[in-house]
Image (cartoon, rainbow, N blue to C red):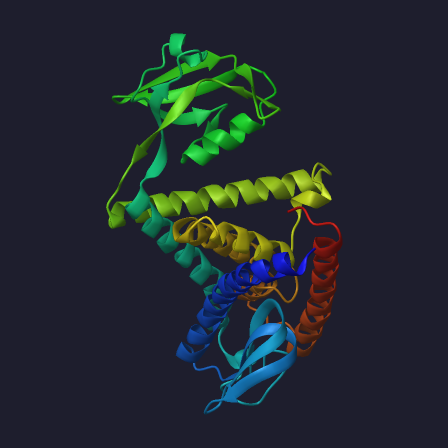
Length: 346
């Protein structure tokens, strides 16, 4: 890589760091605000991991920026074990602790909805309605009409045009069942996709084009909710493939990949950048609700179990488990980062 190309890449890297940093700060702000509302003392609000670069000391909270741009955390009093202070996280009611832990992912979901909605209210959005029938496509003679609302594809609910595209992308030429709503009447069509080749890549299509609408901001927020829902479905669908061994190393990326992609998307303009940030915000929320020690999801499972059983787990044991989980996550993050550097997918 030449010096010139490195210099040109610096603004993109900075945009990537900025975008990812904003999402992390927003996530941790959720934990921070709910901790304050529930009377829990916050000892540290940190962006990044590893060695402290700089920070400021507030009345009772230290605000730090750390060396590795791979996350952040809010450190609460009594989070890692027993504590006598009434403001300790460990001494609060389970429901209060649950609101604190869940606030981070919820903030990310809310941010994604607002960002998607903001973009769609400005640019418009594709909806799963038949906007056109391609002249040489197979759907044009199937009975489907322009204006039909696609509600199911192969018995899977369609909320967004992305849902339709994802299911079609997995098709290998088999017949598809498409259910549409036409003026309140549900109709079903069985269509065999046609093989097409674009830029040397073969795929199967039915010849249906989407409809684009330009909603008000309030209506756009509803489409933002649907997009978040669609992203969640696709992500957990990927987890299912990974569990079955159907995913490759190129399908997995860490902070380096996210930062690189964010920089590349930033070159396309502010609106694609905002939409990509919404997508990453959803991914950040999903990652954090996974039921693994040290993640928000691990805490959520513990707190729900305590609420169901009425028994309190030993805080010192929980603290040690979370510490081990944190170290494992840190190790995995390092491995993924090394993979991103040595075997970049982008």
